[in-house]
Image 1 (tube, helix red, strand yellow):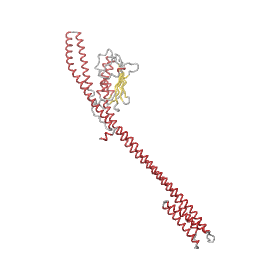
Image 2 (cartoon, one colour; image 1 turned 45 degrees about the horizontal axis):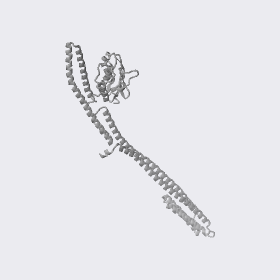
Image 3 (tube, rainbow, N blue to C red; image 1 turned 90 degrees about the horizontal axis):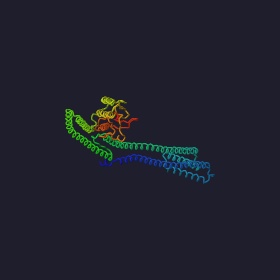
Image 4 (cartoon, rainbow, N blue to C red; image 1 turned 60 degrees about the vertical axis):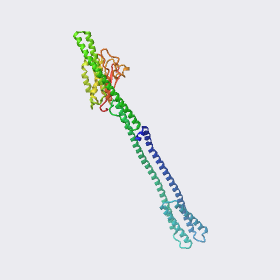
Length: 485
């Protein structure tokens, strides 16, 4: 629990940065240590090869010197001719040769080279014994074969050393390639681990952001029944808790509003019934007495009572809009058929005012509540008929605009002033520009109900500027299509 409280959005961002940097850091360190190790090994091998090459060359040079001295010593085989310093020079050359062989063995050469060094030393000893034996009067041995064997041993030693050098540098090259492959593999593994951690981190954040987005959309569409719960970092959970508080507050306000309107409507209804009864008695009494002024007053009172009755009913209806917004939702509603049905019901009113209807209708389906969608069309068409002049024209357009349905209703009435367009969907709002032939004002809740119903369908209702050379009101409703919803 403490860990969840510490795990905030800021700490997750820092953690993601650290997780992304750590594999890179380890890869760089591994590459640095590998290059350092390879460089050290290369320097060691180069130093060894350099020292061994120098000693090998010295050995081969000493071998050639000792052969030359030995041959000279053999040529001067007559003791009367041979000088004492000749043998001393030969012995000195032999000592230098032995020293070179010893230095070569001290360099820790491999076994093959060591065996060839020993073989070269033995063959030189054999030549020395043969030369010394012949100088002391013993029977001379075939010295040329011994010299030939000495040269062959020196040649083998040279070839073996070249092979040894090639092998050392080949191993160094292989080790470098192995280090490079290891660096690539380890780097790929570290990057994969980092990728897994980052994907997990993004999954946690995206889940929280989706929960927040869903919660905000539900609040915007008036779906207040389901509690809001956001998981993830502590600060995002805090936002979820604040949204939950807002939901409960809005729910309380909605309940209070509905209760208030219901109570107002109930309190109005009983006195209205009493007043209506009295007014009907006055109308009946005026008819019996043929009192024209009294009949007009009674009829005016009766009309006002009916208007108050309509306001009371609209208040109750408006208060119950968001009680259960999902009730009656169907998979797909054929808006073209629904629009044609509503237009058929308005034909008597259209004919009474000689209003022509111009339609541009395309087949469209939306996911919604048929009763609310019908009410939207009826209210818009009712407004258009009410405010249209006699002999006017009403234009209706229904189409699929890609991701949503668009319904436009435009009349040739007085229209809505630009400063009033932002208020036409507010409850009880009435515009100033009313034509003289409108038979009384309504309660001012029709367009407010339209907006609420459109909001229940995650749509948008607005009044837009009329077309060119027109002045009437032009309403547009946009609702997501079945696929988009």
